Image 1 (tube, rainbow, N blue to C red):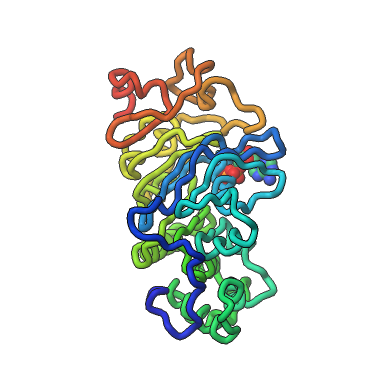
Image 2: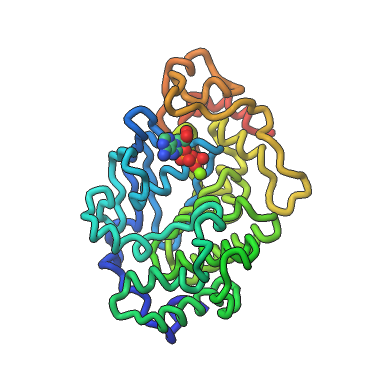
Length: 351
Ligand code: ADP
Ligand code: MG
């Protein structure tokens, strides 16, 4: 069952003017987005992204690379100490300059977020059905409590849980069931864009696969756009159409998901691919092969290419020369000086 075929509840909140005819701007276009915490911590540095309706964009990177900061920035959910510059165009309308009332309308209904760690994101003292009903009531003046509760039940069924589970409290559900509730909540107002920040990280591999298939199915049924964030490149390659790899607050590689996973052109992309086997691969999770250390603290970024201290193939010039994204073959773009030296790079990229 999909949201477009459910009829018993109140109409989900009307799109707040976000539906536009074909030929108009992409669903989401992020231009040169920067986020700086407290004036000194540049957690996101000049990111460009684009997502069309029905498209699934994966954002990969180790912990601390700025992925959650980017996700929260999309709906201006960051603390006041975070300063944002650039543009976040949702159907052509800049989220960064929206008035508060408009922003409230866009949250949930224009775009919604499935957060990392469902246990902490759900309210422990309220039944999950009431928590799903809440955004429906908030966003639709005509919704009644009874209608919103019925709709919550339908949404639970849509994500593979019996409607009766609406009566449960979060602690009565398993981790996978809680994550399904989070997804039902994200769907409650028929958003056009869903942002899923590490939606399966806390789950075991079998449940993880089920949740990923569920998200894929919902995106296909409802023609929404999806941004899926994970440190696990294999998960993203399985689920998404396109991939952006983030390092130290920047996109350092982007392109079709399978190409980036199979033959990344940036040494960081290659290290991430090597670190994560595909779901179902008997090999267990392992630390990034040949990639010691951690991403840099954004408050103390190294000069030159920020990846150079960990890069297995760095040149002397990488310590002083920063690199922009550039064409890297096969629709990929990568921010690495070696992309311009195909002969030398090819010998390393095939393994
Ligand atoms: P990821 O989701 O990729 O793990 P985050 O966006 O959570 O990365 O964090 C990126 C960087 O921003 C980290 O160095 C983190 O310490 C810093 N950071 C995150 N939130 C805050 C905050 N509220 N104040 C200051 N720094 C923060
Ligand atoms: Mg995160």
